[in-house]
Length: 152
Image (cartoon, rainbow, N blue to C red):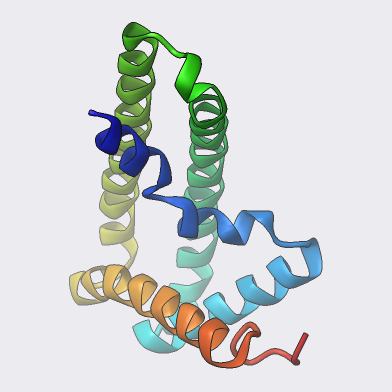
């Protein structure tokens, strides 16, 4: 049970690293992501014009969910030893509820993306997002910098 709580509270830490960056680095990272996804998806100008506002709307909503999730996770991490079984159970349930909110949001926007993009590009979006994160982590590990950016 303790292992489950620890895993649940730490599972998404890398996904939140972007939100903790200073604004200039976050903007540069966002620009790299836009370029990467636009290229990987081979978005036409018309597709990009419809896709990016929708994608950014989804990303903002996801960021809000994850911000709340981090607060719940930090509270549980800081108070883990003093929490009762009932409180730990509630924290786990909250964590799962946040994950469900994320999944519901992804489903909602997946349906919206299908209305503006060919299905092959929608399918490739998910793989491309993972590819971007993989490249980002590789670049950070190999160069200790954001890929495509100047050294720190």
